[in-house]
Length: 110
Image 1 (cartoon, rainbow, N blue to C red):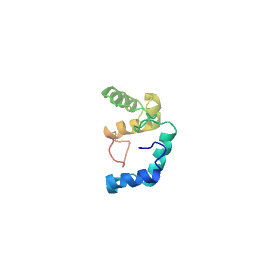
Image 2 (cartoon, rainbow, N blue to C red; image 1 turned 60 degrees about the vertical axis):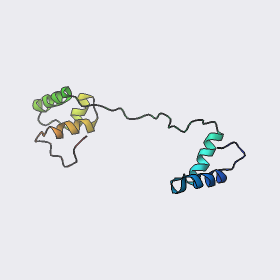
Image 3 (cartoon, rainbow, N blue to C red; image 1 turned 90 degrees about the vertical axis):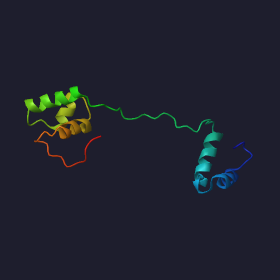
Image 4 (cartoon, helix red, strand yellow; image 1 turned 180 degrees about the vertical axis):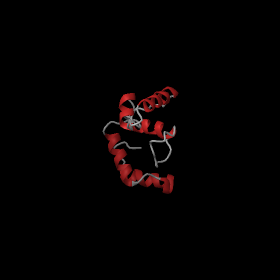
C-alpha cells in the first residue's frame, strides 16, 4: 500500500476501516512503512538463530543411569558435561527416571 505518496497515518486509517480493532497499531504501521522504504519486500519473519533442540533418546537415559549407578554422588552438572548435553536435559532425565537421590520439585519436562 505504500508507494511513497501515502503517509503512514493514512495507511493506518484505511486499515482501521478494513480491520477494525484487529488492525495494527499506528506505531506498527510506521515501523512497517519504514522497513518497506528501506528495501524489505516480505512480511515473513527472517530466520533466527535458535537454541539447538536435543531429543532425549533411550540410549541417553541408559547412559545417565549407568553414570548414576557408577557414582551415586554425581551431580546433574557432571552428568550434563559427561554426556555433552544441557543441564536441563540431564535434569529431566534424572528427575523423570526417579533417581531417588535427586529430589526435584520443578514441573515435569516435556
